[in-house]
Every structure is written in C-alpha cells, then in structure tokens.
Image (cartoon, rainbow, N blue to C red; front, side):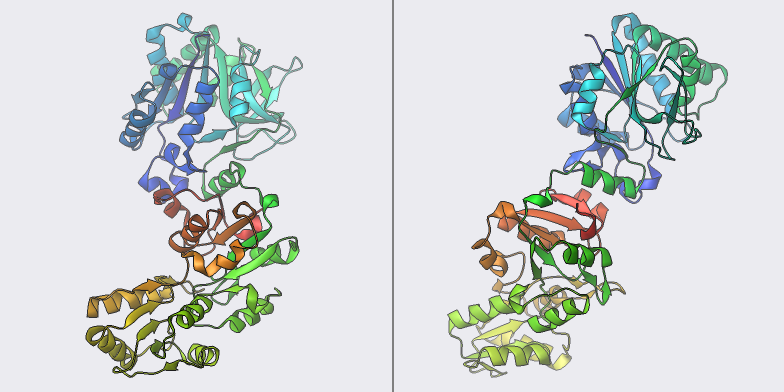
Length: 504
C-alpha cells in the first residue's frame, strides 16, 4: 500500500497556556512522549512510510522542525506563515496541494489528523488497515460537547459532522482521524480549494468541508470500540491524557510513601480527595513522608488524626529519625543545634548523652533544621562556628520553600544559601529526602515494584523515588505545576494527577 498522512499542527493552542507559551502543543509530553510522537509512531507501525508523512506547521515551527530532524528526519514539514490568520482547513489545503504535486493517483489512501490528539497504537493500526475505503474514526455512543459529532444515514454512511449536533442526533464523536481513498481525496481537494481560493474563507475547520464530501462519496464511521484517545485542548484534557496513557497500576502496589505538605494538605488546608483516597483504600500500607523538621513525629500523627487518618509515629518518615541515628553513630557529645524549642526538646529527650549548646571550644558539629523560630542571634552563632571552627555541618534537608495555603514561605534551603553566602560553607551532609536513608526500613519490607512515592516536588519527592528505584506519583496539589514537568530533565513521573484522589 502506498499510503500517505497529513498531520495538522499549525495552531497556537492558547487554551494550554502557559505550557504552549514555551512550545507548540504537539510537542507537549504525555507519559514521557511528545503528542506528535504518538501520531508518527502510530502511522509508522501501521505501515505508512516515514517519508510519506507530511506535517503542516505554523506556531513555533522551528521547534517542530528541530524535533523532526532529531527523531524523524524523513517526515516532511510544510510551513504555514499565515497560521495566525487561518484555521486548520487552510493547513489541510497546503498539505493537499503538496500531495497533489506527487499525484493523487499515486496514493492508495490518505490519512488526516489534528496534531493535538493522542491515539492508542492499536486504534491507529486497526483504522489504517481497516476494510473501509473512506472512514472517520468515531467513539460510537459518546457525546462530548467540545468534539465534532457525526450523524449517519440508514445505510450507516455519514451524512453530517459538526460540533453543533445534539446528543439525540449524534451517533458518536469523531476522534479527528480520517481515511480517504485517492478518488475521494481528489474530490476533497476540490471542495477545500473552493473555500480557500474562490470564497477566500481561510478560517474554517477542516470538518466544514466534509458534509459536502458526503454528498458524493460514501464515508463510514469506524468504531474505535473503547480504545484510548484524548483530544488535548486544555489543562484538564492534558491531565486526562497523563492518566489514560500512563502504565502505572495502583493494584500492583502494597505500600505508598506519601509526602504530606502539598500532597495531603497545603499548610492547614486539607486536600480532601487525597485524604478520602487514603481513608477508603485500606488495602495499602501508608507511610507519611516529610522533610519539615520544624515539627516532631507526634505533631504529624496528631495532624493526620485531625483529618481522620490514623497513623503511628513509626509510620512517619522524617529526617529527625535519620539525624538521631546519625548522631548516635558519630558519638558526638556537644552539638550546636539550630531548631525551634519543640524540636530542641524532642532531640534532647531522645539523645540524653549529647549536650545541645553554643560552646565553640567544645562543639563537634552544627545541625541546621527548619527552624521556625530562627533569629539574628542564632544566625550569628551559627556563622561564628562555621567561620572559626572545623565542626561538621549537618542539614536535615534542603527544601527551598515550604508550601502553605497562602503561598510558599522560606524553608531550610534558603537558610543554607544564606549561610553559604555568609561563610562560604555548604553542608557536609544532608539527611532528608531525596536520600534513601529516610525510607531505608521500607526497602527491607517491600520489593521496589510494590511501593510508590507520592509527592508534589520533583527535586525531592521524585528524586527520592528515583533513588529508591520505584514509581513516582506526581501530584499537582502543591509546588509542582504541569509546565515544570515539561522542562524537567530527569525521568518522567510514572503518572501525573491533580491530586492523589484521582488514582484509580
């Protein structure tokens, strides 16, 4: 078969701002792959040669050109300089015009799709290789207000396609994937040329040409039979695609390591859906993870209890436990501790053999926690020790900000930067996530494939999952925004969801 494909990728995708301010929509990643990659791979695996695929570009076309050069150098780009003043029928016009120079009689079938759709590879393979000469892939029985709906005649052929079709009239929704024979493509080009060249109507959707085509050519709905597809118009669609095209399976998990602030709550504001998930899924063992060393383990047990979540202190994963074991192993006797009163009392009770004091002639180490009562006197003492002694410098974690319901506030990472600017010293050791010691006991109980980390930060929660070699559930209820994932240089999260409650 000598089949061709045209992918329409000229649009701006403004409803996906701010992501599409940085890149064209077709290069947005879903499950570590660009949307465009799903389409090209789907066509190639269905038997269409790479060199027979045409992509009509416009907005940020240089980025698409570079992507094609690096990944699919045989795919042909057609640039539409008028993308701001035209719609995708004009893009189709440019694509059909290019193929007409090859000769419509040289092709068996032409496939057309919009570049903002993801398709299951099985869907594309079955559609490309279906017995239909002319077909529109349809999600039969489905009604989506924003999508193109179709109406069929008694012989099951299509009579209309439009967004305005009602639920009562509609047979299903188009998934924006079209197949036409060489004869039908020739007729389609005549119709499109009439819109563009005669009527000078450059702002129409491609589908506006199809009802006229249906008058002379029989086109049939191809039932995708529930296979996966998503049209990505906005951030809600993108989150749906993230979930639908992820390979993550919660049923394979026995335990979840859940970050708390930004995941279960935001400051004092609960994330209700996440809390309900934990309360309703008691098959799983939960461990509650925090880098926040301004609070003790019992504080977190009590806070979780206020949301109806039962937990023991042993279920809390905090750098304070790691710090306690580390100081015992080092056998230190005198330490300068920068911590609030509650944490200072907690550590003094747990480590009775250590004196927590400011004694420059005796101090063996300085410990920096997230001191919510930090003041200038403490900063002077800490700086004095770092400037004038060879003490070991220990930090419990390195989070830059702490999320709250009123926005982020400075965390220990800001303190670390301040002391580095003042003394030129960096911590000798950092104990909290993403380092595996904070969760080492869990690895003794479960295989890595049976656990997952849930969190809202890529540089701590995601990195911890990487270090544990387990899945990472990225929630957008805290610090990380969807655009951050696009530019993240590490491996892609196992799944991205608005909050933990969306996991199924």
